[in-house]
Amino acid sequence: MNTELLQKLGNMDQLAGIRETELRCGSGKGLTLLELYNAAGIRLTVVPDRCMDIYDFSYKGVNFSFHSKNGLHANNNPAEDEFFHRWPGGMLTTCGLANVGAACIDDGVHPTHGRIGSAPARYISVQESWQNGEYRLSVSGNMEETRLYGRKLSLQRTISLGFYSKTVEIEDIISNESVLDEEYMLLYHFNFGYPLLDLGSKVVCSGKDMKPQSTFSDEPGKICAPGETPPHQTFLYLSKTVTRAAVINPGLEMGGFIEYEGANLPYMLEWKNLMPHEYVVALEPCNCIGLGRAKERENGTLAKLPAYSSITNRLKLGALDGSDISNIRSYLEH
Figure 1 (cartoon, rainbow, N blue to C red):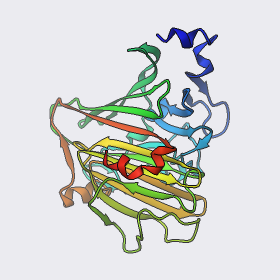
Figure 2 (tube, rainbow, N blue to C red):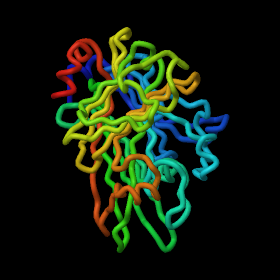
Figure 3 (tube, helix red, strand yellow):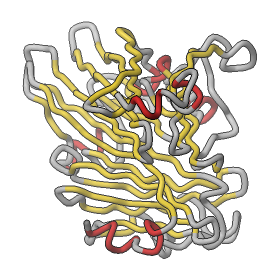
Figure 4 (cartoon, helix red, strand yellow):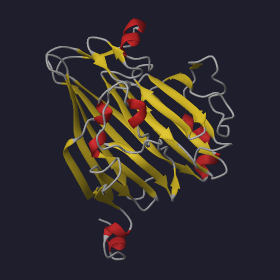
């Protein structure tokens, strides 16, 4: 413990803590939220009822995340025709585990971006504790995607944050709890919005191999004002052993970054949508290329998880400022 710090505080929640709340009205009525905040100025909201995904994310009072006009929905329906009516955006939305991309039929019906993102967590754990001299915040929960006469996949997620850290750590354990090998798809949809995203902001990535996924995709790093560029531009990067990518706003002297291990996530998609009211750039580590399950099968990019096996994905989400921004190239290559 840091006794010198403790003597200056009545309660640790002056500077860092986890608060549990419940939405009382609107489309999100009944949702439980876990708010984590620390002394570095990081503040985020985890939604246990939606796959332990991250909705709000800010640094020193500056918002980094994109919220769609739908907002949070307590009664989420992942059916094909409801996705665009109910997708909330937020800093992180999880896509999978049986489908990523457009709705399709492939040994059953698969809604847009799958079902795991609307799965509520169980075995929820909330912890604030001293670990090796550092005060750490941690929340975790388990989600499942199952089918009678079919798959049983689980996702165990832990999100943690140090007292003075500008980096949130995400650890996911994905398990196949059935007797057969199971095809699975997974995409981490990190969504950056205004004011971090604005005219003059730029997107940077350590990945060297990139290809546009649409004929009207222009420069992947360039950010225009709303409405000044074609909508829905998508770019595909091949991941390295460790990949780093960021959205930088020179005017604010701030940036938001993601970092992840590429062993189980060999690709990253960049989705740039600069339409009015849909102003977002998403950085999306994934094990597929976002075509939908049926087309991924045809394309040979459908991953498989052996029976009774697990994989672990470790990702980071954080803030950059000051010298981090001026040395962004060395950060990417670190």
